[in-house]
Amino acid sequence: MNPCENCGQPVKRSSQRFCNRRCYGSWKLGRNARNEAVHEYLPTVDGKNVELSCEVCGEKFLVPHHAASGTRPIPRFCSSECFGKSRRSENFDEKHRKHDIEKWRQQLHWRSFRRAWIESHPACSSCGVIRRGRNLVVHHPVDPNPTRDEALLFAPSNLVVLCRSCHVKLHVPRSTPRARC
Image (cartoon, rainbow, N blue to C red; front, side):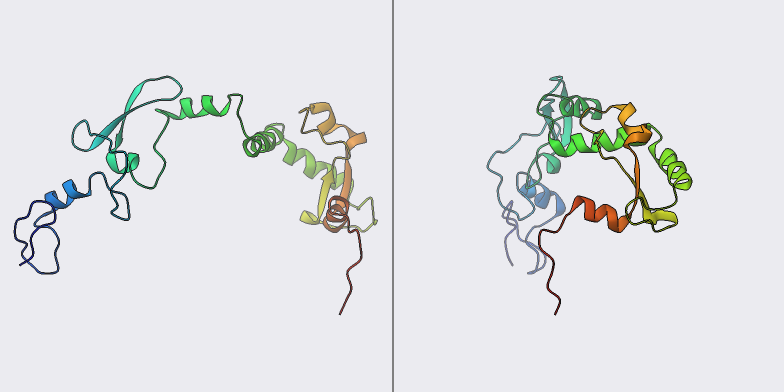
């Protein structure tokens, strides 16, 4: 019979490594998903949870031990409000800023306005082809996103209806034509 890897007691079957679940649980504490010992062992408060402090407000909060150790990053915030406050700080990265701009467009009822504009201008202004449905897009020659200027977003002088192929050609110009085989 093999001894238990945690307490040394004999195990019932040769295929088992531990004598019971409690021994496995105490052995697993402080190890990651690959069963490697974690370098920084976080002591538990009640045997199951680890006490951490929020980076924004400094309030103490409890996290299950498996969430605070291992390969996953340690939770840094006590609530979604504190997480949001951290995102609104000065080191807000570009990816999230673009997401905010898209939310801004949706809040200004851009979708319904775009649909109405395309219905009133059903032809591509570049190639002149009349298209229906999702094949037409509204293009802004002067991008309203950096300034978040509502006047630029809805100004008729800053709106051009294009078909999808002309819109792609406008944004991704080809420097040299492709050779066909």
